[in-house]
Length: 305
Image (cartoon, rainbow, N blue to C red):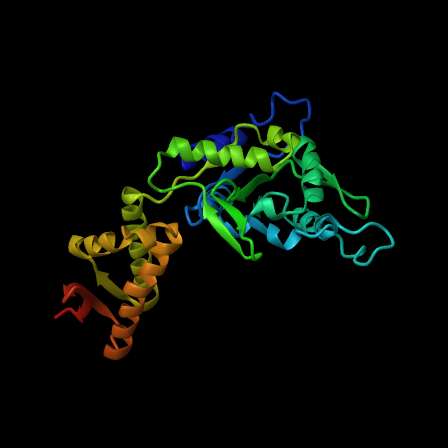
């Protein structure tokens, strides 16, 4: 669902059909709001879009919005006014767009930004331009803007002793439609209506990593690791269906699924990369094929021949 919705916005941008219903002709190429549980691929999809559109995932300019939670944070992004410290340096966001106007702008955990920043974003989302602290107008008309957020997933609770904790508002056991509704309602409750209206129907809610998706992630990660080893070390790792099934079973554990793709990544690192590294180091295997097999419930390796 998430990929299809994101791709439809990108297609609209590519054929020049973005924002035709608006009077402004300089709106950003596209606006997306990625929401949902942690570790479900929001940032990963953004990097993939950057690689497809620009040939390099480094064309994704990322801003961690937890660093812009103070009242003066808007000056860091857009530049300080004349007479203030840092005026000559300009703003981090406006400088980045001057250098690379054809980019994806990723604003991670946007709910942590100070409200004054969201007021400034209104102008960017509507008109596709912003005047920095030095009086220069910066245009965002060639950018794809993506916000990510975990709103609607957890709720902060403070007990009688002042201790903070997080309560899950959604569950991996509930239907996607129910989770999507809670997340969208959480976004609408957090942001001003003007902000939500400018995002429109471009809120993309990512689902939990469920069984069938975890299988795809496991095989994708193992194949990617093996390709890199073959390229860098000239060593081919032979994987069969039994080995993949071993990792599929591990990835379906509740504690892994709750952490999303990061949980699967941690699992592959611990149970595959670490064990393969130990074998390659101890055996001094420098080239050829390495066979994989299961012994006593654990993965093991041996040189072919």
